[in-house]
View (cartoon, rainbow, N blue to C red):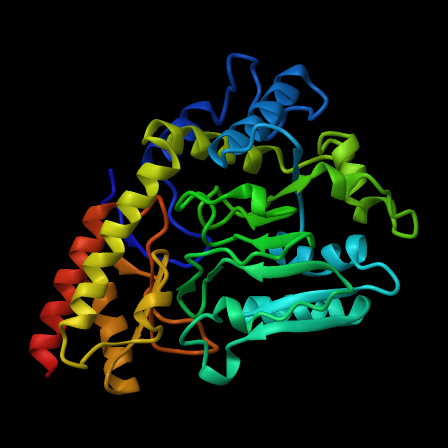
Length: 362
């Protein structure tokens, strides 16, 4: 077998090797039906069972027993930036946004196209280094919802405490943090995530929506843009991305087999600590982009003394079997995305490479 790369891509991202091998085994013939899942009808009993099981597994891992529905949608998390205000931003109300990075800012900009949106808090002036304090979040009382991004993929920050929005539904973009640590799902009216970080391959987006938010059907919208359409049809109104959902199913089973979300958090904290310890002990050779109390355990971001050294770091890292360490094109620097499927040994190897690189270039 070809040597596996140390995959630190931000998304599409690493998948568990066991999941890839299992999917390979069933690719041509799924459960003895004589067809691949790529060929199967989404109206078949085999797929309907898979669809229902995947939704049930996600709710179980999120600690949700009842009161929410799981939808499998298209368009990525970026589609949700528009679909959320289209469904929930009613005339005379406001969509409130906590802006802590590029993606939450994009969500806010999309809402402005649909209706009235306000900024409940923002840390942009501080160059995203730390997340807003609870006292800094001011929610417009006319808000129909409050939107936040729980983990900022590009910047490398992560909320440790979820803000209290009172009776106003909180909507969380968890694309790069879902299932990386336990969360109190009851604080959210809606959770959504593109699959391509911690859930599976790109091609499907999951949305977990509380029943009361699905009570009213927005008939002013095209049928496909209504959450209620997909909820009423168990995400089978149109042909879903069957194979992507199958892969999500396998990843969810893998997370459960590893010990669930609590075990994932323990592993992720240990992995990210390997890298943060090198940064903090480097005497400034490596400088973290985010203040210590706001750091992400998923996306470790840092800079080197010069752009030339950063380019050299990325170039040499590729020669040492590391992939995906260049920072997002909008910010530069270095980013190591250590999602659930990234093994401990990859972070250990990167930490050793970082120490060696500093020793040779200080």
